[in-house]
Image (cartoon, rainbow, N blue to C red; front, side, top):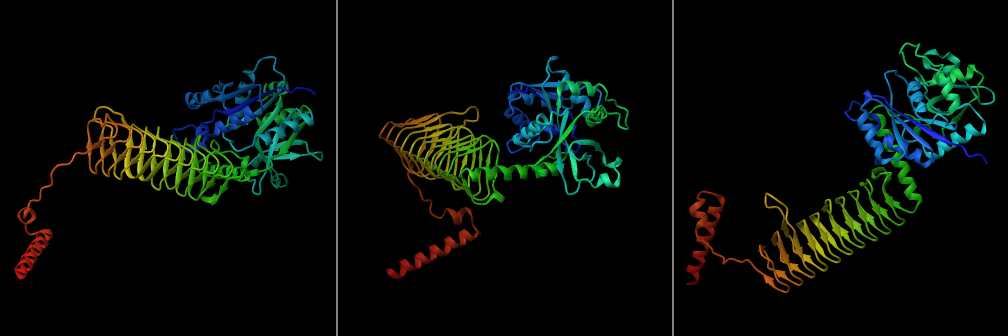
Length: 483
């Protein structure tokens, strides 16, 4: 079997003015990747020998994004505009002796799946074509160039809307802008494409005309899903593409054994990983490089970003970013795990608990109304309601270390840097400024003083003063009766 060499040229030089954004169009994100990133991922999956990305507008930003894709090389487009010139520069950047196939893709068409590209290559090679186009069937093709085929299914021409006859305009297959060419054929044809048109641009579609006039064989493959083969030109189309991708991702995970209770309110990035028997409840967002292990339950009303969730863990109504949640741990409701938060197996971060840059040991509990920052919490610890690790002294952050099986009373404040030894305890309302030895009880209690009459004297005329005065009078009357 002949080994076919493949080069991929991705057109990413457009300005994208309709996006109305400082961000280059191809760097707008959907499903955890940029549009260009989705195309590059497909290029990697095809096992291409060479990948060239043609750039121009916001060149530095686009070129910098290629660092995550080894082998992808930026090629600068010059002052000659048009897709034909971009393709020409991409092909010219290939080794001079390269004579395989050249797949030309668009950086703003992010939803075409690898299988479609492979089918396009198979069609091209099976027909020994000089060029093969990816077509798209549209119910309303108005505004797009039509693909005209002969009786054998080969392409006769691409006709733009403004040039189409009534019969040609009735054709519903349009050109998606995705092509595969023989490298030598493409090089020769591009030399014969000029800029003699109203826009003064060098069009890639003119290559089809040139090849057809020379008697070349032009094939076409209809995309299996028309909605995924169209480009993204503005924010409306970006949101539509994001929705389509999300539906695709959700269906994939459902087929792999994940329960997703309400797909309409669930968003899962293409970059996330879910194991079988994960349950995702409504209004949940699983974003970035998040990974979720078997049996975990996520949601409802939960956001996970770049986080790791262990086997059988539960995360409810919480916001989690760059955190690690151990097996069997529970989070929420209304918890906030920030970067660097690590919950050990069976640990708990409960209602209105915030954890940042801290580890909470196995089986330890931070049940409610607490802040744990820059801390190391041992195993089997229980932090009472309202516990706070005061980690910032207005100049620098400091660490708090809590040993194993420590129990703090409600509203304990740990002033970092401070260390509580194994088995230590604190009284309710304690403010701990010094290290506590293992097994010690730490208290910071002042004698209680009651200043009689303070409210009537200092808040005269208020409802509180009036109530206090009535109560005092009632008490005196009661005492008089008893006497």
